[in-house]
Amino acid sequence: MDNHPLAERALFELAEQVGAALKIRAMRLATAESCTGGWVGEAVTAVPGSSDWFDRGFITYSNEAKREMLGVAAATLEQHGAVSEPTVREMASGALNNSRAQAALAISGIAGPGGGTAEKPVGTVWIAWAFANGAVASEKRVFAGDRREVRQQAVERALQGLLECLERGRDEGGMKH
Image 1: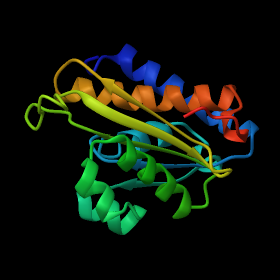
Image 2: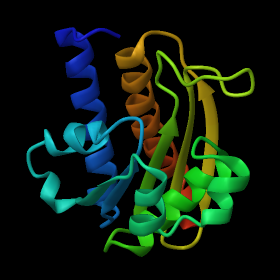
Image 3: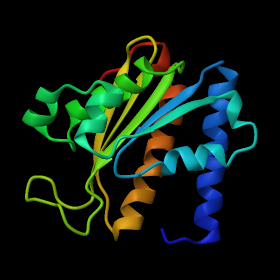
């Protein structure tokens, strides 16, 4: 997971696949990132022609930014914390509501080396995918590695999960989550 050319190439190819899947469906993507600090946005904009399918990205590291830019409820943050399923689902929905996109992904996690707890250890990341039809899916992962590795794995999983949702037609309804 280090900054190896093969890892970079794999991430680029994944972003290309996401772009092709969005473009064929005439959909645009918005991102809402916390612990990844815009890395998803960087990955997708590395793909030539991404302006055809990438609308915008929100980097909402602070709770205030999550509330102000994405409309995450203060009560959600107070009750569940920034690294939680309710928060990341509201982040994804907020990215859709504050963009011209039809698909959104959101990431919030604890990349480390500090900040972890027994309930939410370092490496805990919540990812959500939301679609214009109201469908939302989310999942929790606990990634191993140092700060960079946790962040990189979160970016890869967010893009892979979006591709899976698109390929399964979950953007058109029928999401179980």
